[in-house]
Image (cartoon, rainbow, N blue to C red; front, side):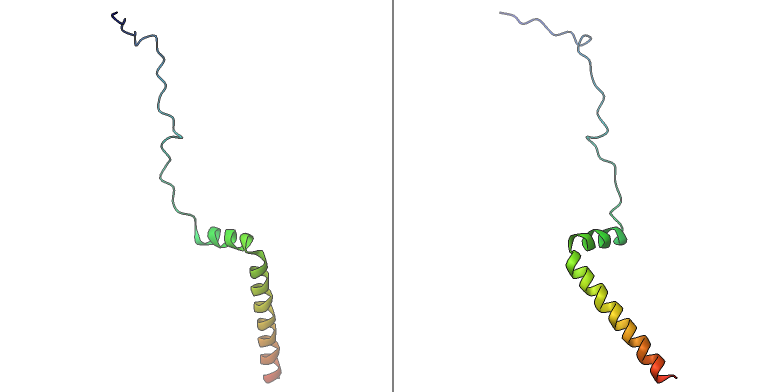
Length: 68
């Protein structure tokens, strides 16, 4: 049996979606990556923050004691 050709006028052609071809996005900034890492490793970040704060406070107290 011979097949009838399909009329292309009756088939709606959708334009290519913009989601299929992602835009060339720039890589995330260093700050954004650092913030994401801090959220994921919460305990280690808080430990390092506390250690830095105590060390800085000890440094300032030491300098103020030596320069009085």
